[in-house]
Length: 194
Image (cartoon, rainbow, N blue to C red):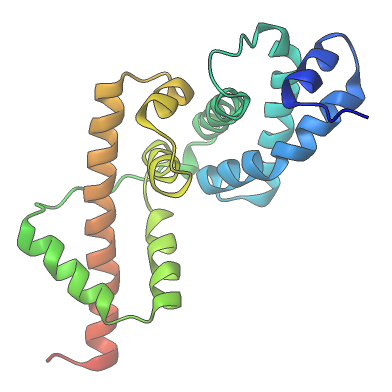
């Protein structure tokens, strides 16, 4: 018996085989849910977004041309479905001012992070990521955690490559600022000034 490829499941789904689509859902449900929950921070809303994203993917699957990986195409749907949900619910909007970032500032953030245990550091960075606006957080997640290329991020977000680079740069600066402002006071109160 031959093993079916992802392309076979896509073809079978387009021809009306809903069981074939169930395979695609099962394969990508965690990826879609993870993106949605990172963007909206609510499990219930992320589940709704995931459902909506898969409904849209099923509906528009005949338009999938294979120009990109299926996962990139699905990320794009989940990303835009998440943004739609966010714009309908303005309470999720975050805006963080960018402080003046210098080489000394970056070095100071690294020094602060060095004072934290590895597991704690990951938790702190994740908490700080949650304070970023959803679109910037998503771009950081795509680039650093999912290790997607700029080309894939452009395909997912419908932004120009220049715009993605600008958002990535701003998001990194904001994240540095958040980390410094969050962690440093905590360390000072915990360990006292040196």
